Length: 95
Image (cartoon, rainbow, N blue to C red):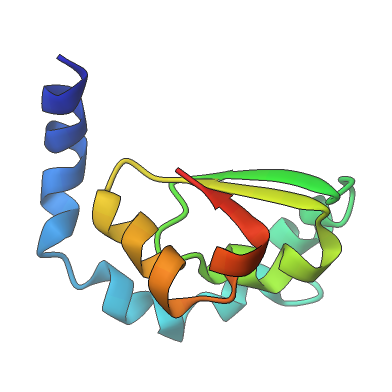
């Protein structure tokens, strides 16, 4: 079933320190000379979809540029975090 598949994918993340540790290195993606930022700057950011959004750290950086921003994650707890702790809950579709 889909729920079983989601559980298989999301279970390893439930007790992972990834989300706590991610704050320390998220900036690497957004350095002006970084490859991710150079590629990101080539797209039209007015309508964005972020898959596997986690706690929305990347989306928070681009939300002001987007007319519509949709965040999706298989781990339901991540969507709860985005809805409750983030300015994204006011400007985004969260799934």
